Length: 69
Image 1 (cartoon, helix red, strand yellow):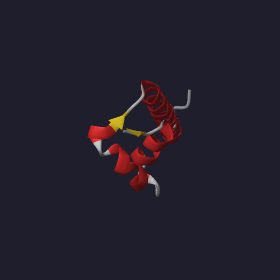
Image 2 (tube, helix red, strand yellow):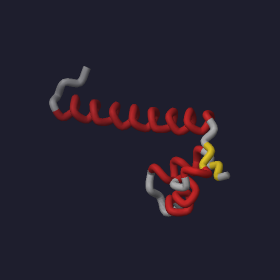
Image 3 (cartoon, helix red, strand yellow):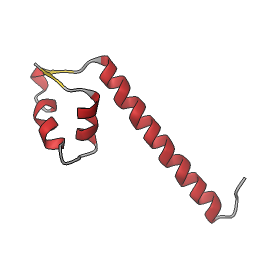
Image 4 (cartoon, helix red, strand yellow):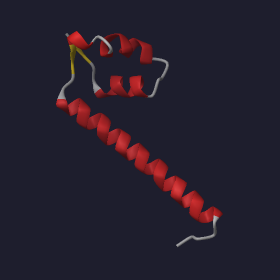
């Protein structure tokens, strides 16, 4: 059984230097166990990061087009 915590998933998804280490466990689907709390934590982190990136992009576009509200 392989249990990967949310930090391991983020390393894997972000393709960090430790991603290969976690890939060994994550890609072995027959023995992989994913607690629901890990799914929630990874989803929350991705949603927060994407939201921040989108906010920065929209702010940049508003400033670049002189449509700052």
